[in-house]
Image (tube, rainbow, N blue to C red; front, side):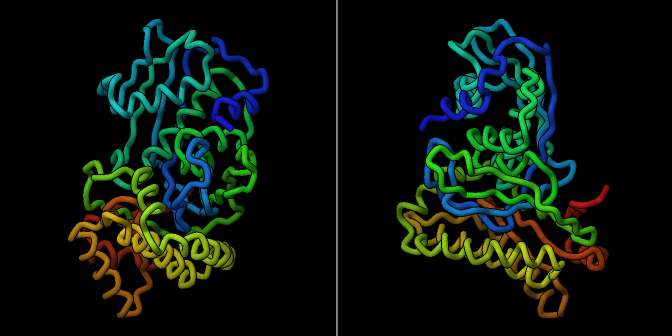
Length: 332
C-alpha cells in the first residue's frame, strides 16, 4: 500500500482547502530508550520492532505553515531559505504532496529547531511531527493522537513518537497497511529522572540514519539478532519505568544502544558514529559506575551521548562534565 492511500483513509473526506490562513505547532524531539532500527516496509516506515522513547521538554521543532501563490513550496530552516533542489526541501515537498490534490496550492514553511539538524538528536522526528500538527490545525481536521502519529510516521518513522510527551511506546504492528503501527503515551511519571545532553558534534553525520539502517540490515551478520534483543529489552524497560527501578532501567537502555551500534559496526562497510570524544565520555561514565555512581548513557545514529541519572547525582555530574546540559523530562 502507498502512503497516499493511508492519508486518504485517515482524512476520510476531511477538507484539503483553505480553512485557516496560518498555523503554528511545536513538537518535541524524542530519545529512543529501546531503539527502532530496521523497517518491514520502506514506503510506510513500518518498523521491524516496537520501540520506546522519552521526549525532551522544550527541545524540538516549531513549524509555521501559510499558503502561498508560488509554483513550489517556499521553505525556511532556522530563518534561512532552503534551496528547493536540496534533499531536505524535496523530502518535505514530497510529504506535503500527500495533503494536496494536483498541487493546487503550495506552502510557505518556516521551521525552527533548537537542536542540531541531522546530528543524532532526532531532529527529523520533531520536524515531521510539528509539520503534521501544523497541518491538522491549518485544515482543522481534529485528528486523534493515534491518527496524527500514523501520519507523522509517513514522514519519518520516529516522528510517530513525537506527537505526545513523556514516555512513548511505538507499536511495530503486523498489518500490511500499518494502521496498527502508532505511538502512544505511557501512563508513567518519573520526577527524579534526569537526562543530560552531551553534545560532542553538531555537524551533519556522515551517513543518514535511513541509509545506515538499510546498510545494516543488508550486510551485518548480527542484524538477525537485533529484533530478538529489542523484544527482550522492551518489557524490561516498561517494568523498570513502572517500578522506578533505575538500575534495571539504565542497564537495559545502555545495553540496547550498544547492541544497535554493534550491528552497525559489523556492517559492510562498517558504520561508526563514535568520535574519540564519544568513547572518552563512555569511559568516564563507566569509571563513575565503578565508584557506585549510577549513571548510564544511550546513543542514537550520531556521535552525541544522552546521559541518564537521578536528581541526586546532578551536582556531581555538573562538576564531572561541566558542558553537560541537564534536562528534567517530567518537570512542570
